[in-house]
Image (tube, rainbow, N blue to C red; front, side, top):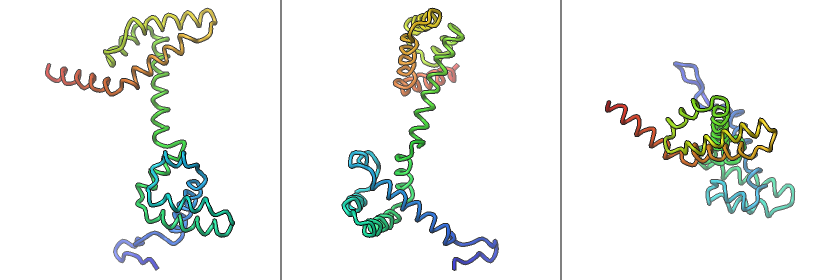
Amino acid sequence: MRGRDDETGEFFGPSRSQNRREALEIYTLGEKLVSLTDAQLAKLPVPESLLPHIRECRRITAQIAHKRQLQYLAKQMRREDDETLDAIRDALDEKGEAARREVAAMHRVEAWREKLLAEGDDALAQLLDEYPNADRQLLRQLVRNTLEERKRNKPPRAFRELYRELRELLLGGSEDGEQDIDGEDAASDED
């Protein structure tokens, strides 16, 4: 029995069903870890204490024995803190935080490219305000070439080059860009 708080009527702990669901999630995570290769496993933030159990579970091929070893692995995984298990899940999840950030950054670059192509010099001025270390002449040239390619139905060589240049500017130099923007904010605060 998990008991209830006399004053609020709320339960003290999770229900047995909730405990089972959490244990089943960890068991499923263990199955995923066992199915990975050593190279894939090395990329994940798996604690060293779990690696021998994962290897042992891979080694056992008899069905019942494999299942028993997998249950033992899940038991060892339940001893780990939630942050560790969440980090493993996130690394395994294709829709993890890192993937979301990467997709968001890609969309930001594409949005700037389309804005430059649609609005021209006005958008370029906005981009240069945010990223003063950008090469104005090169970006202008790439925008002109891209528009010319579209007009003549040529392969999108300059279109791709513009994307690469913007990606390098926005992502490759994002730390520099943040410092420049912070420096501008500091200068505007002094005025």
